[in-house]
Length: 130
Image (cartoon, rainbow, N blue to C red; front, top):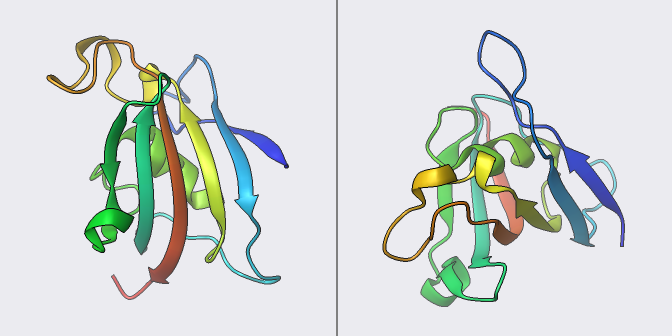
């Protein structure tokens, strides 16, 4: 499977430093599928878990995909930055370092400090009318 590193966006002072986000393609999108851009509203299905396999969330189990606006800070930074490189219909596995997730604070009680998060996600659709 193909793997790429994604650099997360930084603030106006420049890009963030630190480890990148590993993106592994699980299922390729159809040719000419487009990637979302900042400001687009996307719909994704995902499973998220810790490195030890502890399940955190699963939108497939709920049959309720997640909808969010790209670049608006509605999701963790690693997911927000990575989704711009995922074409519609593609399934990827993201390994997101704590720097681009919940960092030193974690997200009690389920996500300990400095946790690496893994997201297996599929970009279902883009609504660029947002």
